[in-house]
Length: 238
Image (cartoon, rainbow, N blue to C red; front, side, top):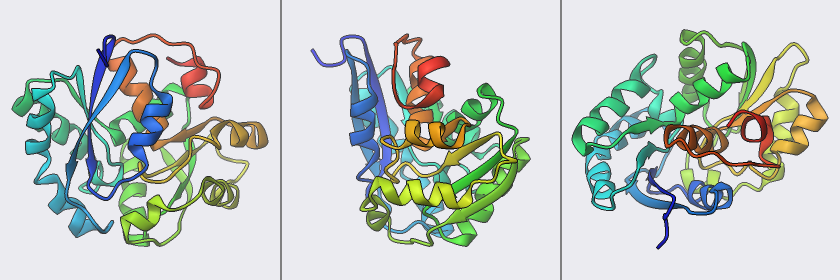
């Protein structure tokens, strides 16, 4: 039986092609991933808000698979309405499904706090208006954003086509030595191959959306695992 240890129920935007493969790569033996989707084609404020309206149906579908935790797997989509929106989404889906629910932006906040990252630089594939909402969300939750830089991509499938070196190069461009750490945002932005390389090169912890979400999902399910890759967060803080 797949998921003999635990089952993660993952809700992703319909156009996300990265989170599932990265989750399967990071998942410990015996932890399975089961996915439902919400319609989204473009990463804009309007589209992200519309997408969330379909999350309840996705959560109910995952409840049928008797998953152990439900993950709302979208960074910008779980912070777009500001502080507390992540917890509001989780509460609503948990009430609908009866299953413990977390969001990516909640996971990121917990990861940053666990790593004592108070001053962060942020690399994203987003357009400026979404970056502004992300900066506001992080700072409203006590994280100072020293710099944030995006690629200006609207079409989500185009974000998913970016190779890891794109995120790597962007991270180097946005980094400043005053930062306690680096955050690479977006569950559709391929990053897990470059986390350890960036930590060695920059000398600070690196958090990515998918890495933080997997970490928080495992902690929520009380799964202990020994990692030797995917950054300080999974190697030392699980």
